[in-house]
Length: 173
Image 1: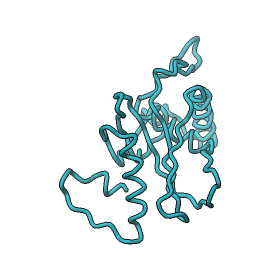
Image 2: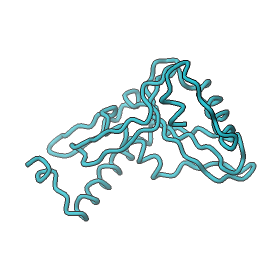
Image 3: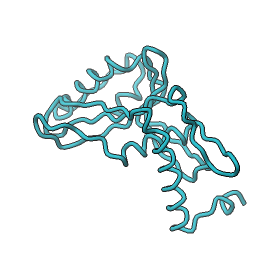
């Protein structure tokens, strides 16, 4: 998928036969959600947070809303619902924080998330089945969950920094 997304219009692509079902599933999803791809496989560094990553896909939808998608492959069973785990949600929120698409504030010396759901990007996982060719499911984070997920990312980042004796002040020196 990443190779497909990096192609320019008109570039030829040969898809191995064993991957054709992923391509079809992705194109089916893309046609219903994506108006314009903004970036694919974009690496970022967020020194203010002390982390970085690579975002699979950033796009705008038909209402010009910004979105971040992370692709996941998953073994599935027929008629079994796919579950979006909290760690998948936190990863998406971390990406949005890292590229400045979610605002946070400091009030009285303490961190507070922006609680206006209209200020949040669309954050979702596109799950592609490895056991049911062509099956896909797109799950977005409900906006009302984002403030607590922001706090989770903050707290987990602080925990990681403490356990690894990582200091932002050392990095700035």
